[in-house]
Amino acid sequence: MLYSTLLQGKMFLVMIYFGILCGIALTAKKIGDRFTKNNKIFVTITDVAFWMLCSIVFIFVKITFCYGEFRLFELLAFSLGILLEQISLNNLVEKVLKVLYNLSCKIFCNLKKLKFFGKIFK
Image (tube, rainbow, N blue to C red):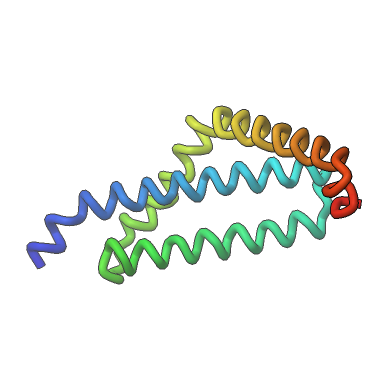
């Protein structure tokens, strides 16, 4: 009992950290939704995939770092991590993801011009 009590701070910080990672995934999902012009089918599929990913991450973290014990503060810390990312890091992550998307588009457009890759990317 004492051992798990002493680890509550670590559990809280780990859940915030993985909440921030899921918040970054949420930002990537939002950018994908914008690029597809909010296509309802695509948005529905990405919503389901995002929440499945977050659930899997939450369960993985619970089993790995929190020994499978469920405590309400862990769920609140995970949600707090997502909220912190959306408030503070959202603009930075959005800019980085847009730059990476534009860079990958330029690379694929240049690869299309080559003879070998032009046949593959028709």
